Length: 583
Ligand code: ADP
Image (tube, rainbow, N blue to C red; front, side, top):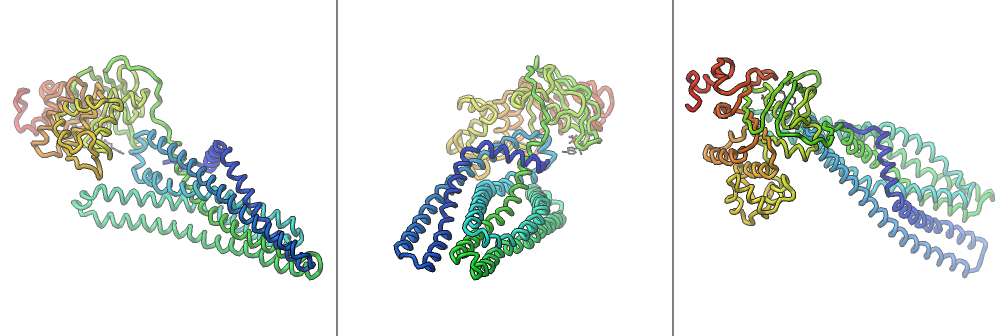
């Protein structure tokens, strides 16, 4: 999945700053006031020392000491207000980012999500969002405050004792050189680190998801090797960024310790030569000590900012995925599904469908049969509007499926597969996904239509029972019925059906078949048939071979033709073609 360019990241960050300009300037102004109050300390101390040396009155010293205490209190109060404001601002900005990220993810074309795999997306929604949250909530405010404090402190030092403060310059070259060296390498390093974690995440998730397969095929060793390889990659990436930090941090530490030493030595000489007062030297050296903290924070948060920026690039990058549908607002005229010379490729240059055309009248039942890998599921996904065809078109009522909004599309055609996820939430929520405005009566009606109302009523709290991972357990048959009830609620006129009952025990399967036929009633059905009696019962049968429709006609016609379907039927049925009702 794409990662945005540095220019785009800057642009997005600028927009974000602009949207919160008001709140940001208030928070910053209070920080400036707090930092300014903090500057009074060294200045007043310097005056006190000079006062003592000159032998001024003790009252004057007392006034200076009282002022010092006052400034410290004012600074503490202002810092509190400023910190609170910038934290609130950080939270608000982060919430906004998270929302826009979720919106972007939810609008990703399904085909992109399938192609990219879940690892990358999961890494972006977890690790990258976490990293970004630290950056937005803490790094950005801290950096702004540290910059303000540093600039103000330097200015104060320059005003208090310009000659003495000149000594501080020795730290600058080291800091600038070290920082440039680091920043030039950090982005690539952290992007590598993040990407390697995404890969590791993907491998582990896939291994856990496919645990049964792994066990059945004795693949544990292979998977462990893969995970080890991925871990090695993350290790190498971590080492790289650690190396960058291990050079940069000490360099920076040295760079901000140098000014303290330099101003002290240089100031001592100036004072002894009579070019500066002891008070001035004290004040400037104290400023240099005071500056260590903000510069230190600046350094460590700059590092965090690098991590955050790479995560930001990955999070924003999601928005670069091109949509695969362009809703025009056109209204389908009728319910006929029509595919015209459709081609499709998962991998560029390798078509898996080679010019498929198909006409389905409303209410027709079509069964697709053919060898595995022939392209049945792919064609099914195209007919359901999940994948847009590479060339050619798939229409409903004369309008291309890709011209319909997803919401509208799902009222026309729905794909029913064996994957029926029960979401964490109440049974009511699970059903209402398909029809947000449905009343409880309508939900119950849908459950009744798929013969599941008794199961639902047997739940401890009926429709309000929390189901899904961690909730009340739901058996596979019931899960499938919930999925079917959603279809009843969504009420599309056409269903693409990847035969779904094969994994259940025969009794549950028969029960489900009844539920299913209730759902299919009155709709156009395109069934990807794994069992030939589905084909036998259909109005027409399409034999898909090598990405083409090799034969198309009713069961009887195809059997009479004596082609591939007739051979299939014969081998399945064991005897030459039988009359249609002999099963
Ligand atoms: P069938 O449903 O008839 O078994 P499919 O439509 O699943 O056939 O597959 C058709 C071809 O497309 C096969 O060669 C398969 O390897 C390929 N294919 C299916 N899904 C993907 C995918 N997500 N990415 C790449 N190739 C795929």
